[in-house]
Length: 107
Image 1 (cartoon, rainbow, N blue to C red):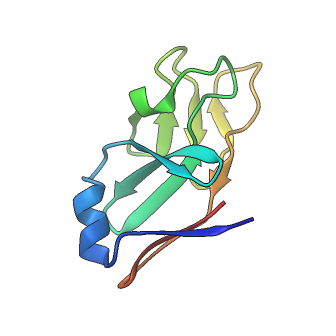
Image 2: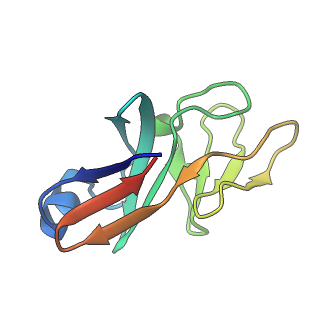
């Protein structure tokens, strides 16, 4: 497990992650998606565990779920739990911490 930092400040992170836009970032050997909703930042695996669709092309709903663009499977961004759909495992999620010194992500 590694700790990665993005940005130099909270304002840097907000500039890099416009509200609700899913971004892909490379942290070490992993590519993952990062999205900001207000002061909360979520990080999760880039590809849907069902068929490997890029979740960067998905969207976020008001229930803090990412929705896969391929089959509309929904995953809770806090826990990774599959909330809608079947025949699919849960999504891998990563702990984040938005501070005055930037964004920490544990991978």
